[in-house]
Image 1 (cartoon, rainbow, N blue to C red):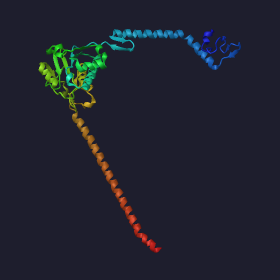
Image 2 (image 1 turned 120 degrees about the vertical axis):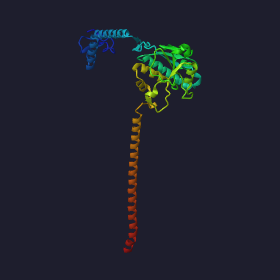
Image 3 (image 1 turned 135 degrees about the vertical axis):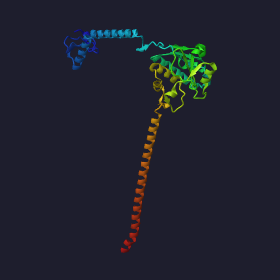
Image 4 (image 1 turned 180 degrees about the vertical axis):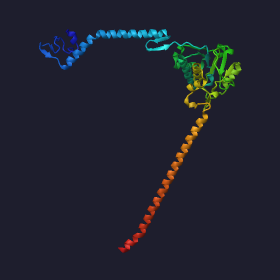
Length: 338
């Protein structure tokens, strides 16, 4: 066995000559020394490592070939391997000719904190559309002012967004008026189905209801079609029925996938809205009344127990007071007898 096999073993003893005997080596002074048990184990591990070198090399090669084959197969299915991130990213292509437009022309009506909220909602819309089963053609119109400044400052990568059309012009300058439908909760028209030939406009406004009805007024001024989501037909809500931009956007995406408005609403609407399926609000009210009755019963029981406990304590105090009085009356007799 060559001295390379014992390299780790004799690193601290330079110029040592190692014999073929696993249990001994010859030091600088020419004396033969016996290997310790730990040294023998280390020697065996090193020897095994050397013997399996080619096997490990073969396994690494097979693993690389397997990964390459997987990437090739997934690439044929429409996926794209992203180097460095080690995950497959689907190349998103709108599967629907339906267009969703966010109207960003309300910049001057919002405080800067609300502009930041709108920016986050737009980011959410972009993300869910990229992951959607049936992505839509996404438009941002009238982009400028505070919103664009905030996007440039906090999210420089937005300029590289894919599958989105960004315009500084107004939506009615980008899309023909007869193809536009403005979604507003103030419209008397109820949307029952989606038309792939239409472009549905969502007002990009976060105003906490300070400018009520403004999107409806804009639609009327421009003479374009308008409608509201069929929320009242499927949902009973405890809060106001004005939805955030991303909620409306997501509801439209889920409806495209499921074809069911009720499922779309309850998939997207947050719990804080207190949404209840229409027709079940009576059951919810009864449950609430039962809880209140149970609470009242518990309260009455607690009062009874407290009252009984108080009476018992009063009786005990009276008995104790009587005993003290009796002892005071008997005390003079004892003194007389003495």
